[in-house]
Image (tube, rainbow, N blue to C red; front, side, top):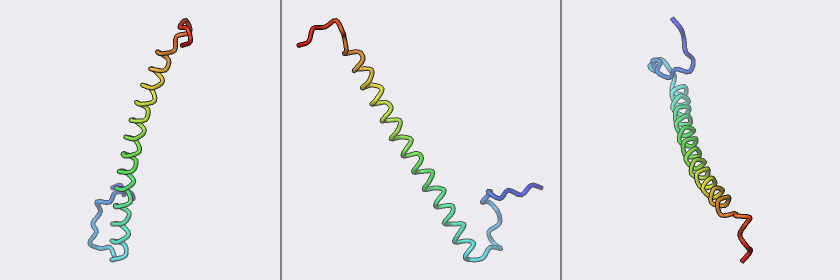
Length: 69
């Protein structure tokens, strides 16, 4: 039998109140970190999409053969 230290599905009945509080706080912190990483990922994807569109338009609009207005 293998013991997994990161597995939080263990029997919580034998834990002290302080241990249960610490476990609950650790679970909340993990969930909030996941949400934060997901939010940052979405922002980065939107920024990359905007910046690639902007750079593509910039390169497309530059034409060295046009006369300056």
